[in-house]
Amino acid sequence: MGEWRADARGRVAGRVSAADRQLSVSLPYWQDRDPLDALVVAEAAEKLGYHRLWLGEMATFDAFALATAIGLAPGRIPLCLGPFAVDVRSPATIAMGVASVAALTGRTVDVAIGSSSTVVVNGWHGRERRHTATHLEESARILRGLLAGDKVDFAGEVERTKGYRLRLTPPRSAITVAAFGARALAAAARTADRVVLNLVTPEQVSRCAELVREAAAAAGVASPAISVWVTAAADPTVDLLATVRRGVVGYLRAPGYDAMFEEAGFGEIVRLAHSGAHPRDILAGVPDELPAAVGMFGDDTALLRRLDAYRSAGVDEIVVVPATSAEDPAGHHTLETLARIDHA
Image (cartoon, rainbow, N blue to C red; front, top):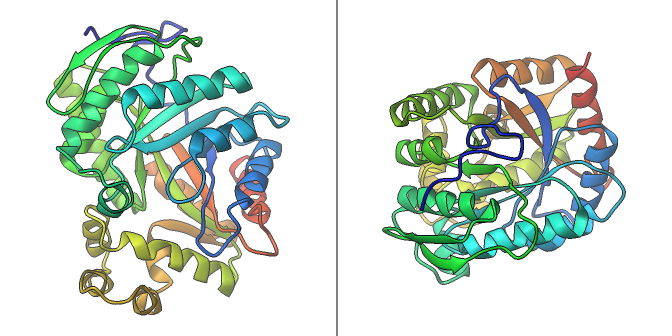
């Protein structure tokens, strides 16, 4: 199958300019908060003029259903759906879902894919994680054709499809790949319009961005833009910090994330997580410094310093994951603060 090379504006491989530095929002799904907070966070992102709204998928909403509900509400903020786990959803089902949301809402709808975790793939869905980097690359190549409206025949090492073509209007979505390890980053560099990183320090962003640039150059393609999801709270309360600490517990023994946290100086809590300790005991050992190393917390000055640090590391789009609470279910204070200081 020939790789689709241009989007509706004739841009090579639909790639996003590295000069296009944006501030976006990702819906948070905090374990101790009402999942319906997602709707009010989306409304706040729209009203405050954020660039894009990301809708992930894990334990609560089906992302396509949630995106349709949000997309039918007043507003025009573009959507990016995912990352979808390639071991759980096939390229054809992802393409159908993206095209469905675009057709039903009339919005710009982009898509992200990733590998998720062993807990999600093996435990929840009973699927096997196979050759992660190869699977990401093959899924992205199939999606590239399907989202352009092509009939795709592809037989790869892991993924295959034959004869399917979208019957809805092709959304021509930009494709993002969530990656962290060297092989996954190289696969993303060869096939994606955008690479998204999660739970990383600015220093780790810089290293990953360099790996992406090198892999893209070796493949003879333009380097994808870099996005990073960053948890944030303006003037955080004790309760907000507790919510954030609780949210990182599940990542401490996930492959890739564990190494990242250990590199950032939190090896002791990573080893506790790998020991099989109860999540309650792991949570008790998570210091506030851990989420702070991979997030943005504090007053205006502290937040602006972190925005600058991530951008200096090579980020084109900072995706804010706002901490929410019963008093502020939309994370409005954080989103309003970041929007204000970023445009000051």
